[in-house]
Length: 411
Image (cartoon, rainbow, N blue to C red; front, side, top):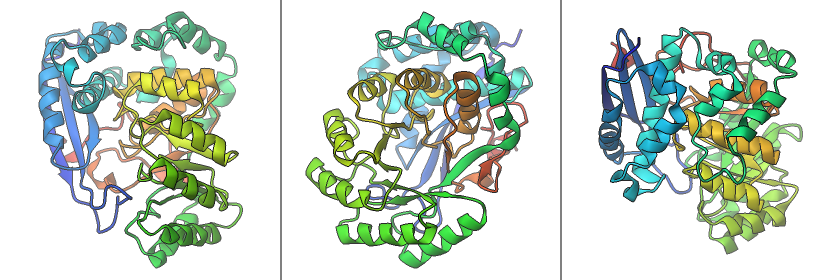
């Protein structure tokens, strides 16, 4: 019996090259990981949530508070009813007051949950994507907390949806050998000048990328439009272009800028205004159609996603297992998105390490269309099993676990 023996947190902080990671709101970020480590015999599962600076300490303190209740638990028994476990943790009678289901405490839950999935995959000697694909629909449903979204998808509907997509799995599994397409965000950080954007874009195209994202939201709107024109020219009409405002604009600004940026034929405009303003997203989606709205990087839970999906305020679902309550809430959002017919293109607060597993599950098990997965390589050197991206494709990870091991914690 694999028994959880100890749980610890680690506050890891990494400086970035000048200009990297910058957007309209976060001008000089430090990429930080609030890490959970769960020990079980000789195995140690690792999970984390992403923050951008000294607030990382707060998440680590919350990890220590929330995770203590798991010590002494049998891992297999825990995962067999994980939806109940995560609901109880999310509804901690003291810490829930600080959310509920958002902010520091929810980020801590994400880190803990992701560590549980890594440990579970390690204990079964399987990469996470393969472990998930080997579970029955009922076992997948047992992983999920569907509270507050039962009006959209309850347990039986989740099972039925998974079961209905069993047919065709063999054909869809070919993605495992081919690799999952990526898109490059790192060419278009806000602090990069035009020449650097052009240079990085050319290099990315030489590496097989066909889709690119540009940060917008400059104080000078003409700068955004100039850069948008420059990047569209660089990638040509056949390239896929996305814009990301990182919540910078008020609704009146967003109306103006989204209309103007739509002329450069982007696939989507991301986070055009405050992430809680559902009605503003609905209005903007109608205004710029057929250009679509993408959001999710700052949507903290499945309930917010539910409301955005129901209202029509989102067309690309950017769920992130380091912002939501980990892998299990990501899967719940993916099931809802499938029911609404919406594509899931994760925001990679994990640098693509866990999400490379989850997009494979989404395609093979849920028949989500193949889209692409964001690629940000800035922390690659710190992972013991860094995501491998070749010819613009994420190569399927074959080693056990969720690809979340960090070198400095394993030495």
